[in-house]
Length: 112
Image 1 (cartoon, rainbow, N blue to C red):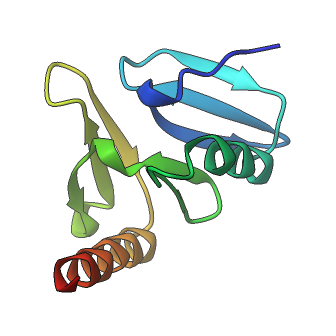
Image 2 (image 1 turned 90 degrees about the vertical axis):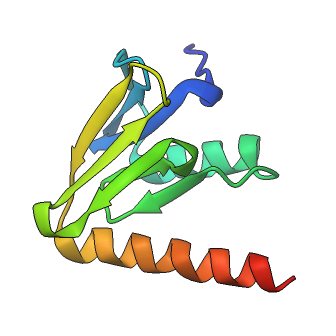
C-alpha cells in the first residue's frame, strides 16, 4: 500500500496501466492504478479544494502549482514559488483549453 501526500503532488502522468505521481520536489513514485482511477481517488479525497484537474488524456495537474503557461512553446511550468520547478510539455490545444477553462472559472468566481 502506498500513501500519497496530496498536498505535495504536482502532477500525475499516465504510464500505460499505471500512473506516475510526481511531487513538487521532483520525487516520483509509480502507482498500480490507471489515470482514470487516480482521478477518482484524488477528487474523492480533495473534493472541497478542487485542486486537481485532468488535462488531456495523460495528465492530472495540481493547479495550485501552475506558475506559467506557454501554449506557443507547448510548456507549462509548475512551481512551489521557492526552488522547485517542473516543466511539462503538452499539446498546444490542451494548454489553450486549460488556460481558457481557468479564465472562465476565474470570471465566474469574480461575479459572485
